[in-house]
Length: 256
Ligand SMILES: [Mg+2]
Image (cartoon, rainbow, N blue to C red; front, side):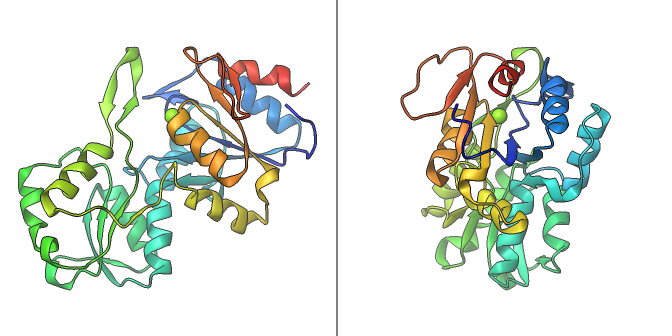
């Protein structure tokens, strides 16, 4: 990994990189502490669309990783920022209370009458069902924008298990409405990196992305011109400049 330009901020993915479910991954705390001691900033970049940033700060804090609200970027938060940029006042939302809460923080209302919604927002919703799909059918014949938090197929939890992600819900909505979403705010979109650079006055070469998903984390980093570490036990060669490590703890050897 080139030493110059210097790295000014690490953007760590969460699911599968820092933790799986409620269990911190071996070596994650050591790497975070090591980078902290180097005086390099750490932010967290997650496609999670179910939790508020406060809940992520609390979850990380419970694992001994102290951070703050302004260093956590989630696809729920990014979607709320995007909706605010578009000046929506009422949106229809498929998602959890956490997603609603992030949107409402910007003074945007969650519509109860679908005819008043200015956009449809889709996040991961563990209670998504046929009725929720039936409810949004009026969007079939409208030109209301559809914004998805992400298209992740699945995400890893403990014991080698995976749970379905937001992607299958987005696919169901697209199929039912007969049209594609207009915007995706989460990875591999670079929207969250855009927020990071403008919030903290960084440029792309200041940032290194660390994640376990080539299609999400590394594609995002490549699209934005950032360096990256891919944590992977199955890939050992990559031609596009990402540095592959088997375990998160292996990153330390590149920083000494
Ligand atoms: Mg991940």
